[in-house]
Image (cartoon, rainbow, N blue to C red; front, side, top):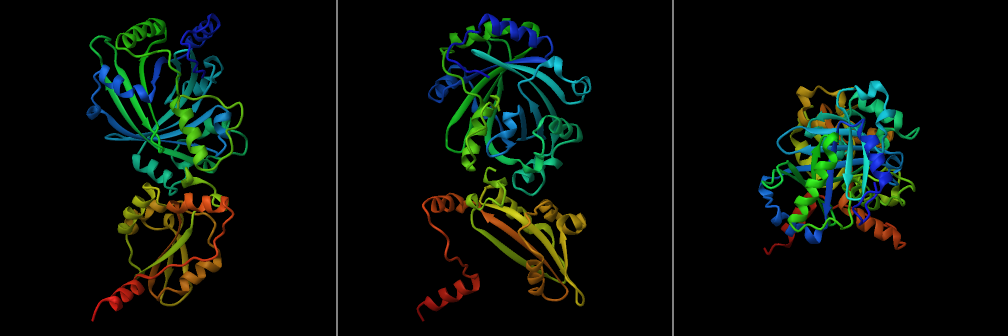
Amino acid sequence: MAQPSNPTLSTEQVAQALRLMRGVDGVELKFSVPDAERRSTVAALDMDPLDAQIRQVVFFDTPDLTLNSHGVVVRARRIQGKAGDAIVKLRPLVPDEVPPEVRAAPGFGVELDAMPGGFVCSGAMKAEVPNVDVREVVGGNRPLRKLLNKAQRALYEAHAPDGLSLDELAVLGPINVLKLKFTPTDFGRRVVAELWTYPDGSRILELSTKCAATEAFEVAAEARAFLTAHGIDLTVEQQTKTKTALEFFAREIGGAEPVQGQTDSSSNSSQEKPVSDLRETGAIDWLLIEAPDRKINGELVPPLLDLVDKRLIRILDAIVLVKPVEGEVQALTTSDLDPDEVGDLGALEGASSGLLSDEDVAAAGAALQPNSLGLLIVYENLWSLPFAIAARNAGGQLVGQGHIPIPAIVAALDAAEPQ
């Protein structure tokens, strides 16, 4: 979608918009506010941030944004106080070219987004999902394909590049968003304000209002008059939230320049890059936790997922080892266990990178006492990633690494105390 500083549509653009609007379910009029004018705009429109709803938005694509270049956007949201959602979106899209069975599918809608000087038509299949499921996908503990329903997966497969599966996509995000709905007394229509804050501190404030296609031009004129009356400059260069987000996180995970010809959008990070790309990987460690009498529960998982949510670590593998009094050690994934017995351990389902060999599992099993259960976790230290990349780019290489056991630290501190 074009974002020129000239907010006027050409005659050809108006004709094209009219043709597209015959087949849409609605129109959303959008306007982005430069960060330098954000505070004055909030004050001018009397917006109260305390009324805003907190959201987290995450996208899924390859590091070079191949999916976006083919006009497909996969997005998920966690939403404060209500269920989250997952969306597969096609943009740009011609409504008349959508197959009837897709057009009639539950959750599918077609909308035209318009900003000063440009517009784009898109079709999206949306489904409600639990917020915890989105969190697990972002943390690498749940496959993306399990977040989407059958119809969404079919829509993805029909439009994504051949051979690019959902579980190959990287996590781009999350982005923290504040969403505020309000109705100005001198406009008479509901306005939505979204403030997107990117990890580098940059922000995009977007104002929008929705209307029927038949009243789009009338509402656009009213919105223009309303914003202008409040001192908001409509000639500034427009930014789109999705395009900015995709390009930001693509750069962050070290991807190549975005594929040329990619579509513009109005909408892991190192969390979900391929483990095989060691140039973009932080230090990887493992832990083996033993539970005597073969009893373990999921109490240790919430703190672990908290580290994942804070992007300090990424869980690569989680294997449960069962060692009987006699016989061979069994290696199980968390999905093989009874959820009533393991509790929150089920949240680690799907964590499997292929890094662990049979020999590694056997060595871990040998370290366990008979009649015990062990939890073997392999994780990447995401906090070390920027330093690791900088070191490699500078020509450095790791020649030594180690850990000091806690008992050894305690003993050293005790020895250092005055007698």
